[in-house]
Structure formats: C-alpha cells, structure tokens
Image 1 (cartoon, rainbow, N blue to C red):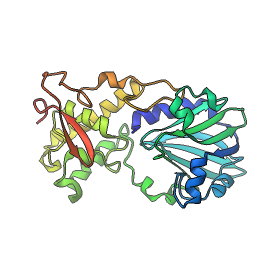
Image 2: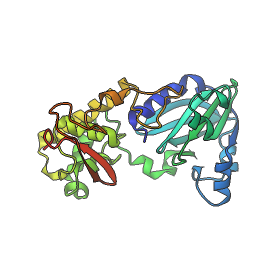
Image 3: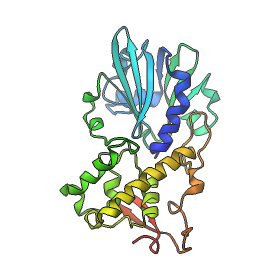
Length: 290
C-alpha cells in the first residue's frame, strides 16, 4: 500500500502538469460503471457518476497537495469550490500522459479507471490494479468526517505532542505499540513498512504494549518514525510490489530497509521474525528489539 512517502512522490509528479489546468471531460472505465450500476462504490465514492462529472468537469485545478496518504485536488469554477480527495488504496496510481498507451507499466495501462481530459491535451489517469482506491468530490472536508480526524503531518511542530497525548487515552494503553502508530489519528501517514522500520531503529518490539514504553522510548519512537518517512521521501518511496511514480519509475527505499521483508538483521545477523499485529504482518529482529 502506498504510504506517505509514496503518495508524496505521486503528488509531486503530477502537480507540474495539472495545476492550473481545466478539466474538459471525464471518462470512466467499464468496471467503474458496472460497479455503480450494481450499487457498489467502485473508485468513485459518495456520489453517482453523473453527479461526479457535474462537480468536476469544466472546473480548474487550482492546487494539489498531499495530506497523510491522501492526494487533494482543489477545484474552482465561477466561484464554486470543490475538493477531490483521493486515496490510492493498495495499488492505485496517477499518471499524466498524452494517451493511455504511454503508461509504461502494463498492469497500470490495462487497469485504468478514471481519465481526466485536461485543456493542455494531457490525460490525468487514475489506474488501480485491485480497485481498492477511491476518489471523492466534496464541497468541504466536513463532508468526509474521518478526514478531519487525521493527525498533524509528522513533520509539523505540534505532531509529537499530539502523538504523545494518545498515550493518556485508554484506547491503546493495553494494545501493541505497532497498532497505535498505524492509526492515522495518532501519526499521519505511517503505514506498515515505515512502522516496522521505525520500531527497529528505536529498538522496540512491535507487540509491546503501548503503556509499557517509558517517556524516552515514546519520544525516540516518534523521532524514528519521522526519520524513516523522510528517508522514504528522499529515496522516492518503496517499490516492492505495485507502487510506481507518476512517470512509471520506481523508488529505491526498498534498498535501505532493515527488517521489512528481510531475511536476516543487517545489524546482528540473526533471523528476522514476523508476527501479525492489527491484521498486518510485522517484521522485527528478536535480538535488537526488546
């Protein structure tokens, strides 16, 4: 699943080509249309396809930004403002091309689902191999309440205090620390890969109960979450399976992972162990992490 660094690179990749452009028209794939016809929310969530077109076509993309694992498109038409909120799900991606055939990754070329035709003759294409992603069109964030619960960006000044405050809440006191830091209400954008890597750097086992961490461990863990997310951005994200940049290229963070999907620890040489926590497969070193 694309996490904060991957979504950051997708956002950076498409922004120069689509910011300031008018959306001339939209095309939906057969799968999206069949899903809606059968009362399923396939990619386009929260409204009918005709309504989505009404509030998207002929709008200008004023700006694009990332928040947590979401990409936000700010739209405007004659004083009416809308926001596209998109989550890439397990294997979604945006591409800017002249024609569909220009998407250089076969699976993404085959599994396109939404095409935004722009006034500059470019196509902004949303592709999704597994169809777990989503695009919503809202007038304000209040129409999507869970979005308002997202924690501050981990690089913001108040992000650590926000995170530390969650240790005082009953919800996670007796649950694994890994489960806690995966909650986007606690830390914004930290998914499975980067949580595993941050816990390794902090020397903390993912299954440790949250309340067992002392104050120093709590702060160190947040520091390393931020550090691995920064590294992920630096190296263009982690391309282990489906993730691709907007131009189809891959990231290289996978070359810098210590425990996630590794066989042996790069520090002590012992075997990496795995454990399912909050339905996610956690990778850790039993020797280096306590």
